[in-house]
Image: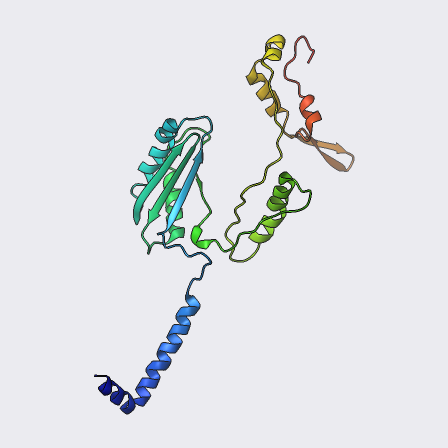
Length: 250
């Protein structure tokens, strides 16, 4: 058998060379179109939905968020499986599709179906931008005498934005670090003595942390934009918040 193949190859040299060149250029063209990733993932296309509702138990999260979303997505084209996890204050739903489906079309189809889901007021599901198959690089920010808050500020406002400007980069996910926060510790005894409840304190803090737009002040040929700057910048601003008034006295 091998002898006949060799004899036919010697007789039809031109045909064998032409087929060899065809396979060579075809392989080079296929290699050029081949997707190469650092960490290949054999898992099928997957879209992850993350929904937060602080203060709700796992049972309430499942009943009010997870189940309605699963019902709405059950008829999605090329859908193969839906897996969900409901924990305290969080719903995590993973939707799997056929291998030959278009992930971008799948994400758009899910967004369209989410518009018809009735969820609690203020709740908005978020599509996770992270794909394991597309992860190409991990890095760590560190520095002498640098706090976690400062490092995360550099990551969010400088490094992350610089990476997202690179062509082909879909998103940059940040893990770790701390965000600058101000915590107000409530003394129940002081609330009772001043006749103030917790709702009044929260409302006063919220209303005092906002900029207010005004009108225009025209002086001659010039106009000035009038607005009030009320965003909280430091602890002194929090200490000066007026919680309630009694007979004109804060």
